[in-house]
Image 1 (cartoon, rainbow, N blue to C red):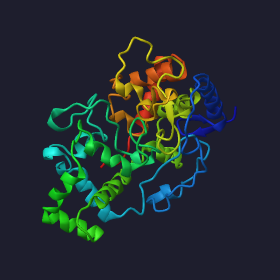
Image 2: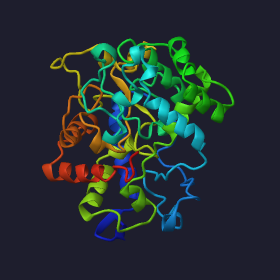
Image 3: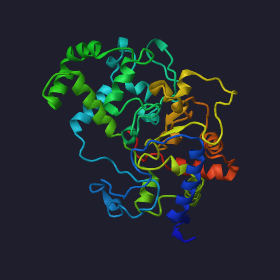
Length: 354
């Protein structure tokens, strides 16, 4: 098989990941589950990198045959909306009793999560599922683990009205925002109107669109052969060969399809307690084929988002890789391969978190 040489190691040409993808797809087909795509596993690399700074712009589109599509910091966002949205994201007035903000569960310093198995909302109420990272959420084709929200705008209202999270409503929020002259002035500067539900949601969405986190691996995809170590590249090769990239691909390295938790091996085999949250997309669609089906999470910044999975059942990234090998791919990964794949996943951490 023809290989491409890179500094510090070799990464096989696209043939290897296509073979692995076919193998993993066969496993998924046997599970009799329909996968829903928003974007294909690999699209022509036409990226919005024209405004990227430095040499990386000249290296754009160098590697076109990888299952993962590189990203750059988003351009053309409205700076005023982003700033206002950031303020609202950190504003506890969006909750009952001004108790918690969006950032309370999605701490941007900690990778966009709170590091807890289940988050706490107002009055210490505990949620029913592990909070996903808000970073790179705009790359996902649906929002929430079960994909019930079509986009970020629809997602914003979920935590606000959830009695276990922010437990309030826009009817309660807007009077508080409009009673603050500085907040009203900030809204008028951006929207030419005082705070209302529509422009508040729009500002939060614009801010969340800014939370794209290019990593060292993106630099490698853009053509910088010095960006990754030999061990990390070996981990990436294993990631592709074993079929991980069948579901974790595209710009989000996930986030663009639904998949059953337990494709090659039954995850809920009687040895685990099943809660409502474990039913996944079934809670939303009530279709039997959607039982235990979830949106495939992005792997960007995955090293920062422990514990792992919707049920927080894996405390470490190493353990999560082993579990995925067993339950999704039907393989028992050797320790050295788990280690190298984990090193690759750590290289997906954004170089500039907000």
